[in-house]
Length: 226
Image (cartoon, rainbow, N blue to C red; front, side):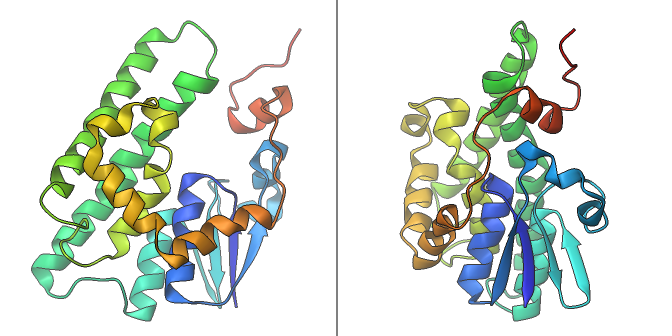
C-alpha cells in the first residue's frame, strides 16, 4: 500500500486527488508543518527538502507533487495523452504548474497574508506574477474544456490543487476575471474523486494557529522575540 505524506495545502491535495482518481489504496500519513514535523529525521530521509507531499510506493520513494503525479499516472497508464506531440504539451503544462503557478501563487499568499508589514515591493511583484500566470491558464482554457483538450487528465489534477486557493491568493473578486479557471475548477470539484480528496480534512486535525512557533517552522527566517 502507498504511504502518502500530506497536509491540506495545495500540493498534497493534488496528489490526494490523483490517488482517488486512480482508485489506489493508500495510507495517509499526516505531517503537521506548523508543529515542525517535516523536519523530523525520519521524514527528511524521505524528502530531504522537508516539504510535503511525498509517497512511498513499495520500494520507490517520490517527492515533489508533480513528480508524484507523473509517477502514479505512468505506473497506472491513465490520465496521460497519447502520442509524442501530446506528451510534449502535457510535460510543458505540467512543468508550468510546477515552476510557475505553484511558486508564484505560494509566494503571493505568503507576502499578502503572512509576511511582516512593509513588504510592498514583494506583494506587488508576486501578486502581478500570480495574476499573470493564472491569466495564461485562463486564456488557454477559453478554447478547451480541460488543459490538454477534451479529456480530463494529469495537468488538470495538478492545477486543481492551486485553483482552489485563487480567491485567498488574489482576492474574492479574482474569479470574475478568471472565469474559465473558475469553470474548470467547478468541473473538477464535481468529480467524486475530488470530493473524496477533500474529505481528507476529516481524517486528521492539523494545527490551525499561525503562532510564533508555527512561523518559525514554516518561515525559518523568523527570529525569536528578544
